[in-house]
Amino acid sequence: RPDAKREDVMFKFAAAAISAFALASAAQAASPRDQLLVSADWLAANAKDPNLVILHIGDKAEYEAKHIPGARFVAGDALSVTGPEPAKLILEMPAPEDLEKRLEALGVSDSSRVVISYGKDRLPAATRVMFTFDAAGLGDRVSLLDGGLPAWEAKGLPLTNVAPEAKTGALSALRMQPRIVGAGFVQQQFGKPETAVVDARASVFYEGKQAGGSPAQPQPRGHIPGAKSVPFSSITAADGTLKSTDELKALFQAAGVAPGQKVVAYCHVGQQGTAVVFAARLLGVEAVLYDGSFQEWSLLGLPAQAQASDGGN
Image (cartoon, rainbow, N blue to C red; front, side):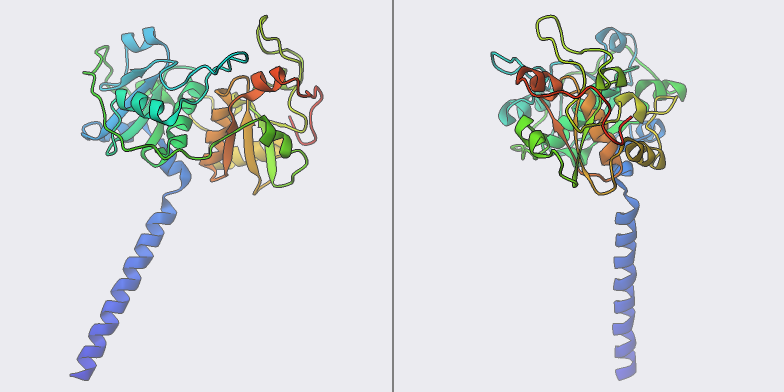
């Protein structure tokens, strides 16, 4: 029957269209925020997933007292190295082969779904780990526990002081992503309308009211010329969770970061800056880290600006 055959073709076409629409809707629903953040409730519901790897970032004594069941402790230098003499930049990214072994030592495999938990006031350390996973090409399989361990505790969810059995993962060769830039790249961005250099340090450092560095490596007061100020502490709400999408958009705009600009974040040594990179990623904004940050900038004798830039805080 010709009519029956035509109806069958039309039915299949309609079914395919509905399926395509459903897939497109699902993809649209998976916003960057949905991919990068998980709630305590989500983590509790998925705690038995055999592929789940929970990493705890923070103080060792805090971890030994209480942590999420199954979470493994990540030492401060577990995923970073100190650069060579004479600068000896701290918190640098390990070489790919070295980083691969370090991630495997934390139990991470190709099939792993990783969630980063963190202790009180340790958000920048946690976003540094998030950033490391992203730079290693594993950004699509790692999320941050919104609010960290305090958010888990606030829900009355179970805690333990027992460390899980150590397991070694198995990863394919890492495919490193271009997430890190150097001082030369930052200098090239001066005056470019498509890029915003963002200082993630506390405003007292940005404004030059207080100098950073150490007695051995003193730093000039102020910030990289033209940089905008988005202090890392400004991206969270009072309860320690990440601010809403609208609040983060307003925060960047108030600092003078225009919609569509690429963000180049920096801080003291490359940790607090990752919190701003993470906030930008939540908005779907392209962001990279100047890993040497103001430590390297100062050692190179590059200029600093003490007064606020136009549009800065």
